[in-house]
Length: 508
Image (tube, rainbow, N blue to C red; front, side):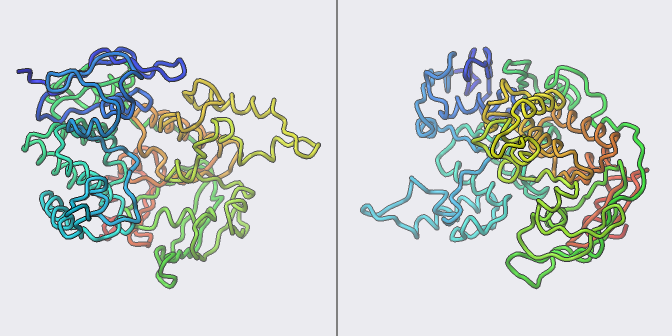
């Protein structure tokens, strides 16, 4: 009997004449954790969607063998019947239903055709306890944090007697503690004979959890090897086709005078109107500077910058000064008029309109710029020139500017959001988790872009939960803890330990 539970041979998949996968092959051993690495757009998710029945048999060429037999899937349900389940980066839970209802949806225990909710509770409790998840089965999913929702999604998959579990970027929205819980769950599954395919850009997780790594680049298999024979640097080189000797390409740039100041800023909870989630925070920003804001999830970083930009839906107060003059920002339009632009953390929900094209997403908030004197007409020539210019400048990989933005990889979607904001020629650019969920190659390009912007005199405020990124890119660092500004550092001889000490509420 073969030691491999899965063999995918010469898989080729086209989208509108463009090859997403070109003769890709993958072999996975029984009971191992097999990491699948590659840049955004490399074809990882497409390959897994074929394996999980999202793209049915006949929509691709090549062969798949599972447990020694040829695998022909016409739907996701076919895959689940075979013991194959996939957990996508975007969660598929119904937030208005309880944990137990989500886990057993479509597979509810019943007595004489009537759903047995008591049995559903008992079975859900067993599944959650198996993985040390302290979650009440009756809790509505909408009342759980993102990390707990991700763990519920995994529990849902495991309730279906899974033999092969596919996880696509499962930790992109998790806290460090939730990541640890997830990795322990995967180790537990491995001990119980479950095979996992693990897609992640976080190579430290890959090195910790995986037995084998396969790298895909530009829709082709680059190679596979056991983790013990690899380093992060070697994996990165395979992913991007070149050595990235320095992940953070810090470049010399001139920092000028203070141009922006925030004084005594307070932000109030949306649900509890008298509860402050940002407490009396003050800071300044200099011309041509990258100011990093660090802190744990829940520290109030996003609430602070979204309030400054005017997009926070709750109440906030404080003073904002631009070039020494006090300004009022009631909404994002006010911020944009003052030359302040923002790339939000949730690019898909807040930064893009998925059913619009690359061009339309870039120019929709800049449409006034292209209006001719005649009412209702647009200078399409200038619009196209600008769009093509930014596609080239930001190296956006799109077959055409009319392509729907939802069809781009995560890294290229992020570049479209950046282009939309840069078209406004801002003085200040706020970036909230600018590299979350994108690969090392795309990260490198965004870092290079950030340095090119500050060289032009643009000032950047960057929130990041990745301490190496904060240290690798920032000129100065502010650390927040429970809504307060806990520390401030010029980025000279600063360590991760120093920042973390502040982030957990210790002394600076």
